Length: 247
Image (cartoon, rainbow, N blue to C red; front, side, top):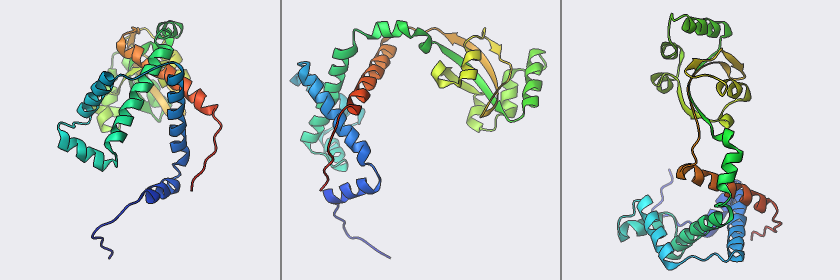
């Protein structure tokens, strides 16, 4: 049985393992993304002030529960990072955020109103069955008041956690659902149990509990900004020609 007193892992070992794990394309994409962001920020005249960098560093330490210097050094060593690397991470994150704001802050509101329907949510409960006849039988039993959706969910959902929640799926959006389900859900009049819907996953018995109209609050505005920036960055990265040289 092999036993190691100590083991030295080099940069070459790490690079070799990245190759073996077929991670090179992913790493290359990240490198190109960083260069695209840096170049675009420079072109836009975006700068990071010392105060911003310090505030972001404090926030990152808080997020990673780095309460004191000892915790910080331990975290850096664990991740193979130097202080300069730590500052580079914070700098790049800040640069991305400021570039996203520069490019899209004034476009978020119009984007939201143009695509308002995409952000309408539906609070749904769902039971997925294998038997269409059984689904029909349960649906009509609910309609006749012989049982209720929650008892059906308790008796017919196999997953224990989902059963405990009586099939609660949370707030779902159009893109979260199969088209045939989405069409029925977003024309429902809550609270309404929909007629069973057959998909490749089975027969869906769905309770639409509430339709949630979207509000452009800070959380949604932030998410839209992230989405717009991600779309922009993806297109830019795809346009970059590069030579890959690994020695």
